[in-house]
Length: 245
Length: 245
Image (cartoon, rainbow over all chains, first blue to last red; front, side, top):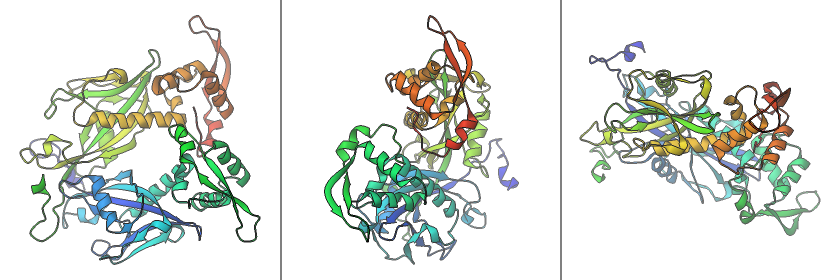
């Protein structure tokens, strides 16, 4: 690439020209089957035709990055309370084959966004795409571009948010047992992230899980108390540094 | 801007063309005067001629985002262990006057980076810029572009890192008293972020502050023990979620 790193005749360095894409890392947890899922779409054009990829789009004239990300998702998924949070920007040279002089010649930069949605409330929209699927993180296909790297970055953010924020309660059903909560953490963080009884006592000590007084029986186990997340009790803790695991 | 949001003749939406900049939010703490500082440079060209701004540059052909950020800093500051971490990407329309059709007509996107450097080891380089300064966060001038917003985002990241990571020990002298440490936290997080005796006992319980056995006297106070950060004792905690305040 040394020929592209030359100074222009006026002694100034040539600036790179960019197109800007947004790519969304959308996670969900299937709490019935205890699987962490990520939303993928099959590409219907070159490059990487028929490869699975993160759902993304290119930013249009006059459009903000965030609006582009929401516009794109609105075409793929209907979900309550889908809040995107910016993840990371990938912008190195040679991350997109369309950069070559034989193609469009522009650099392609990707601003990635992250969300976690409740599985039962998310409805996929298949209109006009060659494929759309919730893929289990444990069985990922080869992904287009550097999307495997973007996805791993998103996965680290998800783990981090589970450790430091009450994001789990956005995907659990409204009423859940402490076993359900532990199972969700295990599904995302892996077996043995914490001992169950430590986890249980730590969470209860934080004071925002309310026992509803109702008990359920799951399988052959003893009846377990149903809890709910008490947003009011959590409010004063919102800006305090907390650890959940 | 509605005239720019039109579809092209072939029915496709017009994509925005971008130039990409990197802007660095570099903090330091003057532990003698207990002031949080940010590195600013005075712009020597339009737009915002003679305004203070975050040190930034535009990405050149063939150059990665991170390399552009380091290239730029190498011209402004000599510091040991300066590690940049990506902060956030600001890319909305109308954030840069050069976007107008009468100017260059491209959108300008800013990928911001963050670092905290040790004040005593950072040497500013004034060559060829109209001004460079460590500005106290409490006395900021008007900043160019949306740099005030980028700076506030960086400030939130700094507070966050102080709460959840041992970043404080990267800017304190190698040997420090617990009072010095508390003062550093107060300088960044503000008075009353935590009670001193709680802070002290929490930090000591984490087990990676080693008493050197040496005592110093600061002003009229009682002699206080000098501690050092024990990186080896911290290593097993590195990937565990921790709270420092």
